[in-house]
Length: 388
Length: 79
Image: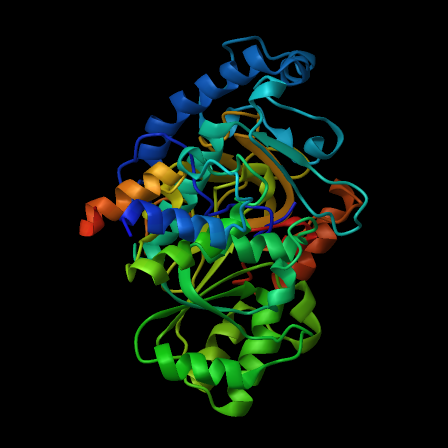
């Protein structure tokens, strides 16, 4: 899976759907999610059964009768996210496909294919926009891209990174890249950007490891003042493990050495495009937008884990209407820290890392490792396949 | 030049359109050049030409030439 900023969400135009209400999307308590989302999710299950033969066969094989799907969000039938790598699952006819998104697998071997019709493409873009507006506001801010302009040069072959950069570009203006076309740090470009825009809020976007390596390290060395920045990043901590940088360290060092304190990690994947789980202002955990939820499961029994006990993350969202991706079991490990007890209501959680290929048996080892690691680690490995 | 003609010129240049393109009927993703990358160039070019700033929702909603034109008119840049 993956949290992928890449293929993802894009700020390309949606289609003609009427403008949705611009409500703040981090307002629902867990009880409200059960009450409001559950009927929508049950209807989605029936909708996808009626329109996606492959999905109907899978649920049928699990012994789930039509109309008999789940009395709580946690009881809804889920699909392993990996299924989208092996099966073309769509709930729309081929001639209504407007956009097909693909994940970028780490190995490159397998990619998920996610099909959107016009309505779904518009819905996901608007949902992402409303979600990020909770931390960015409506205005497009001057934007620092922690990447090289080369990643968006060839439209025929965007990498996951390129897709991520492009998907976020619409949230900003006056885009300035932190690396030059050859991928070398360009402190003078950053300095010029800060001279023009650095005394008012500006947006910074990048993959987590690049933000550390090419923004933090360069800004610290050149004593750049990033105190007006709002950083949005995703991609996971794996590549930073050898530098011993976890989320807490990342935040602390940015604050101390560059003045940057408004930092929001996010977690999402192309298989549930448009839905991103965003780190709250306190940096304590990821929060679910109002149209989404998470369930952390015991990898042996698949029962929902109690708060504080790590397990496999299931992501739930009412967005996927053109493909059966509304309830997906990821390949990421995570833990719910609390419910209705944080900055925003609902569940707050962290991503602890990837599920080892070894499956359930290996999980406990990983848990032990993770428990000793960064407690606040948030986010999966996007590149592995991601985007935002 | 009218707002509409100026806007057509911006589209033609920002999206590198063929001279025979029917710009007034153009819709997002209808042609290869108006994809998400082209869209970013287009939005920046319109903002430069007309000295306006669109917010995120407007960038997302700008799904056709006609929509862009209507937005400019709503911003007081009608002919």
